[in-house]
Structure formats: C-alpha cells, structure tokens
Length: 251
Ligand code: PGA
Image 1: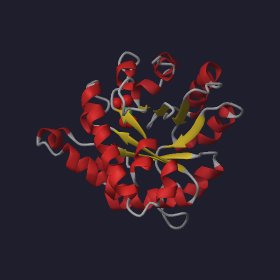
Image 2: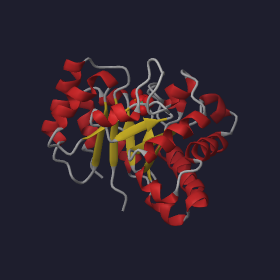
Image 3: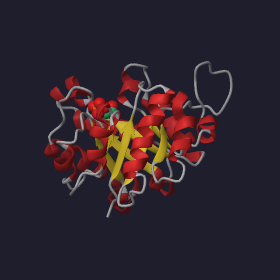
C-alpha cells in the first residue's frame, strides 16, 4: 500500500511572518498525522523560520527548486547544501513554471535530480503536458519524455526517494482540474514507463501525485483512483481553510 502524500507548493507567496503563521496552523492541526505524509514547500527566504515551527512535528520541509551545482559563481541560485542547512529534505524539481517560464530543459532537470539524489534528498519530479499538447494528442509522448529525461541515469535503488507529480499545465492555477479518470490514465501510463525503466516492483512502489487545481471538493474523488497516491497543491495550500481539508480528506 502506498501512503497518501499531500504536498503544498507555496510558490512565490508568503513573507516570513505569513509563512510561520501558516506553518503554525498546520502543525497545530495535522502535525501529528501519521497515516499520510505531509510536506510544505515555502519560498527560500522563509525556510529557516518555518523549520523552527515544524520542529517536533511530522510535517516535512520541502524546497521548490535547487541549483544543479553545489556551489560557485551562480548569482541568484540556491544550492542543495544551503537547502540541507535550512532543514530541507525534499526538493520539487521540473515544475512546469520552471520549465515553461524559466526555460528549464529535461537535461537541466535531470542534472538537478541526480545531484539531489546523490546528496541524499527526496525529490518530487513534475511532469505534464500543455493544453496545446493535449489537444494534439501527444500527452503520453510528452509525459514519457519528461519522465525518462528527468530520471535518466537514476539508479533503481534510488527510486524509493523519487515521487512523480503529474501536473497537466492547463490545470495549474486555472480551476480546471483533470477528471479523476483522465488523471488516473496518465498515472497508470507513468507507472508503465517506470516499469519498463526499473521493473514492476519499482513501478508499483512509486508514489504518483496529481497536481493542478486540487481543492477540498475534488481531492476525495481524485484520491479514490487506483493510481493517484497524493496531491501537489498550489493555490489551495496557502490557507489552512483550504489545505487542511485536503490533507484530511477521507477515503
Ligand atoms: P494549483 O498549483 O494547485 O494552484 O493549480 C499546483 C502546482 O503548480 O503545483
């Protein structure tokens, strides 16, 4: 049985005081949650402060991105070493906003993935097609390319620290979520790709999150699907009123 995994991607929202207030509310409500894994990824500037709030709770601290180098002349970048120092254990990589707004390629995402795994982090690798790609009928081709490209050279023994988030770009922040059936079909396809790459056991064990307009009123139907193991939540993770019912969805 794969444990449900709910993650909040706070994107470029929350000052330090706003972030610690939100983290505090989550700790009070779900900090002892054991049946499911809960992660929050605040902006870099709030990581240290949020780490203090999470201490002693089961909520895991994540980062939204990382540099593909450990140190050096990379103005404006944040390294995995700095993230570890801030208490981060999980890194989101290849988010569609990184790919489509900041031009990250599969090759760059792959370098980040390999470095993060080598440095002992867990990762969430995001994959997903644009509306244009969906309409052209190339969803599987795109998702397969991003999955294989992102995980190229990753050893099977490291797959236990890999989560994949399927986030159709057209569903992110738009209020249009994929139907549970459409999302499940892509999740099942991703499992087939992983099975070809790493074997059936790794594919069965893999946690695959859905992301894209996950809300309190659609989480339950999504989580009922056989291949949907969790959610990567953006907008609805910014308020306890919307994030807590998602974390506490009942099956
Ligand atoms: P959304 O974002 O929940 O606001 O659609 C999801 C994401 O980008 O991870």
